[in-house]
Image (tube, rainbow, N blue to C red; front, side, top):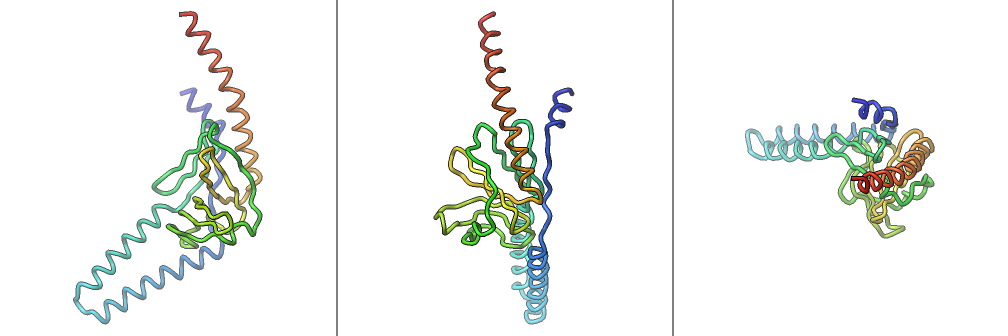
Length: 194
């Protein structure tokens, strides 16, 4: 029980909030899907095409909706990026760099497998400037924070307070580096005593 309370004391949560552009795109896509289904129903009375279209649309919507980013946890052991279905964990020992991005840096990034505006910006993006792929978990096209791990995987997240997110990550990373060596030294001395 004490470990759970201790873990909660170190958790910082950064929630995602959709920007105006993302809200507009989401409403337009949903309206177009409803309109397309209505047109299929009108022109293909009783056929199997509307059923296949509905099935395909529902499956695609489900895949997109389950990948919507929800919040970022700066926890005691790892940085956690939570989506509706999946979560990405980046341990502090694996972090190489964390930095705020300039507004124009994402100008040459486009989605490979992901969403551009439909409930946010997420998925795998290709950056033409660096000629590399990045994982994007953003709800707004701005306030970007780039996180790179030691395996050269880049993550781009967004939140309302990017400087506070970076400070929390650096705080936990520094705390993690100070605690682990002392803990290991204690484990070695304990194992020598037995």
